[in-house]
Every structure is written in C-alpha cells, then in structure tokens.
Image (cartoon, rainbow, N blue to C red):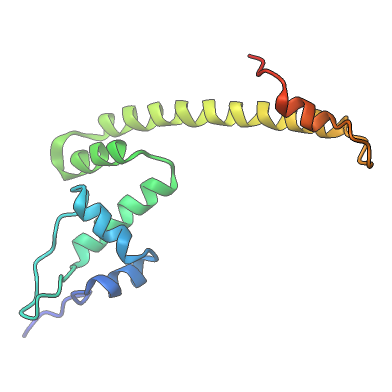
Length: 140
C-alpha cells in the first residue's frame, strides 16, 4: 500500500498563501540562504515540501519575535544540528536583553511625549511646547 504524503508539494504562490507571506519574502530568504532553493518540477516550478514549509514558518516567527537575520541564521544552524539547547538559550537571552533595552527606551519616549503633550494649550497660540521640544537639543 502506498503511503500518502501528509502535505502535498506546494508551488511558491501556494506556499506563500499557506504561511501568510508574499512571494518576495520567500525569494528573499532563498536569496540570502536561510531557505534552501527547493527542487523543481518537470515544468520548472519550485516545489516546497513540509520541511521547507516548517523552516519558512520558523523564519517568519523568528522575525515576528524580533530576531535579526543573523540570529535566525544561528538558530537554524543549531536546529540543523550545529549546537544544542544551551546555545539556543544563550542566543535567546541575549536577544531578550536587547528587547528589554528597547522597552526601556520606548517607556522613556512615552514619558517625554506625554509630558510634552500635557504642556500643550491646545489652542491657536503660535507658541507650542511640542514644537519647541522637537526643536530643542536632545537631552541624555
């Protein structure tokens, strides 16, 4: 009895639709080597299997979580057998430190904008503290 493939081979457009990205995204990840070029059909269409679909989802999710291309490249290398969970942990905690710094910067930005907006009279006056704050030298 022939075993059925759980996921049929997909052409690039079908893959893009299935994972929720566009064709150019797939081309880009192939071009930079994160996603290997798949085999082609007799009609010269690229055919993506379940493993390539899973790899693309991994890349897309990593980008959603803010990992850089090089961090994703490192994670993929680990997933492909060039390391272990401790390596993933180290990379993830380094990324988490970056995320925490960005959050702190965003909170500072929120305070500055909120304080500046609170000083605004919201009238027709030509003097606007928001404009003044934008024109002022940046403070550390």
